[in-house]
Image (cartoon, rainbow, N blue to C red; front, side, top):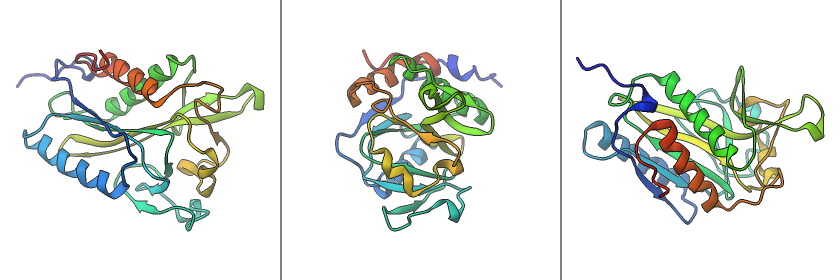
Length: 229
């Protein structure tokens, strides 16, 4: 049996990249992911990283608690098979659905999630934002010194699902969404901290700028050629 290479060093085919210009309805995105994951698992399709935005909506992960949905009539609410609790998706937020074959790369879920975190942190660094991790809190966080010594806001979320060692769902990075839209939920079950975005931090970045940074840093973390070139 051939020992698999570490995920970051896997000599794997560079995934296909897809960017959707118009907001994609959530149910349609899930259907497409389900179909692609099945095809990847069967060896009928390449891996895929899909960059998109959704219309305003809330999603409930497998650990979501009803009390954390404070305004259920504000936006559509979708039950989803990904891990995590309630989260918001909407215009101005870059969602990256990551469909990789871990069986071919490295069948290590914890390492995969860790690489997603590294990917987001490296991407934020290109905009001079220091993203950090916190024990017991999923996602990527930014210190807000202007709000107090211990103030932190969440700038990126992670929620994944794995079927037959193929990953789907993925990450979301707040570029310039309407942050008030997060007020209808307790994001990821954490009420002690807020949410932020690149725009909220005073950084002017287009979605295209963020996409280039995501592509470049994906290659550094997960291997393969740089699709931003």
